[in-house]
Image (cartoon, rainbow, N blue to C red; front, side, top):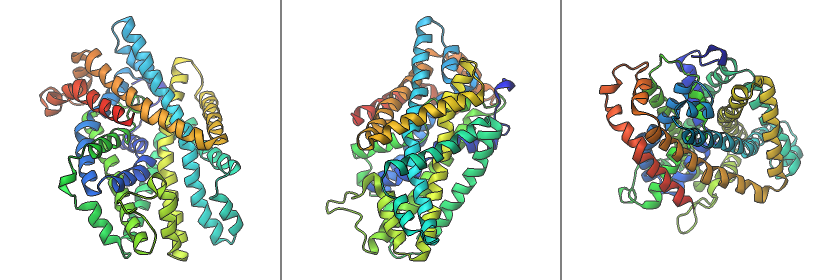
Length: 448
């Protein structure tokens, strides 16, 4: 490993950082919403199958690229290239991932700012600042700018510290906090009236729905995108992994943590929806669809918390702190992607690269905030419906069709000498060559 670049000092450090990148608002916000909208337990079952059978192989491809290249996404992919055309293709794939990671962070910071404002709001009410509390959760340009800038500052503060003292150190702190808060809230919600009905909806699948095309496509998309695939994030994280580590087991552990936290989030939010419904809050329309859709976190859950009296303010504070922590563990990986490229390919210092890129991304956020009704949806759809699937698909094509098979095996053998005889090696090369690109293409076509 190139020590001048820095790197993860321990196995647990990488696992916490990579899991933190994967575990974000998509898991704790998006997964339960998708579950409630797509058959409940049937969606959970399909998601779990696809996460390990399709998302994990694609996730491994990005980790392998990074550790082989020991550099940012562009340089790592170019090191795998054998011709000029391959090198140009490598630049498009690598730099495309960097651009989309930056675009995602520009709107992610706004959403995380909303989470942060909803965490501050119960504190304002508890201390008697009712007018301020109302303003904090209302839509206004100044409110959005204030909390987005605070969140971006926190992300920038961590990234400037580097890999070991920034990303790894803070991921090892934030991830245990996130899991602890999640478990505390689950334990509380499951004691309330209506929670059992929610548990049944979440844990008892209707097998007849498992083969519905829309459910399968939605679960496939959630499985791929919850692991940060398609933004070059895992390429740069992979480049910080020691050559002595067993990548196959590392990737499996990160996938397991990511899926487990998504499952825990559903275990909190789905029963919470039914608890709110038992207390008179409208959750589902007459046709069974989710009324609030993606905004369920800001509508249904606050309504639930309001029915709890003083305890509801505490529960609201804990929940939205949890959401903010989840957002932060993802945002630091998004910012690291362009920062690493600027440091390694353009000889900028980490401090300067972090500041310049952080300010540029924040200015994009300001542009989105200035016309949020139009620009927010445009940014989200551009990055997640178009950018991520295309880059993820091209990354799989690169590993499956351009990178020489013997070089792939050699890289996998580092830290795992018996990999050639393993079931993983017998299946994975064909998965990454044919199955994963085809599956991602299905998601992309469906999103259109």
